[in-house]
Image (spheres, rainbow, N blue to C red):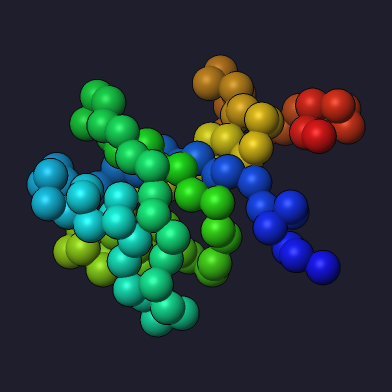
Length: 105
């Protein structure tokens, strides 16, 4: 049974210690070599000094390891979306919302 049907896009808001170069972003878009192998290509966009990265894999600490592979130190990392479930912008840290099955499937 293929596990690909269980994979969902995961979107992260990433703040790096220094602004990424176009070359570094392009390497992330292509996929980079980390200790567990070559990552799949990432979708990236820059907005207000933050990098928004969408991947469909979920290896341990993958986002931090990908940025490290291109020479960038991650200062702050927040997962803001899994599949169609979006993290509300106004949800205080440490708080949670109950979701219905139809919100995630």
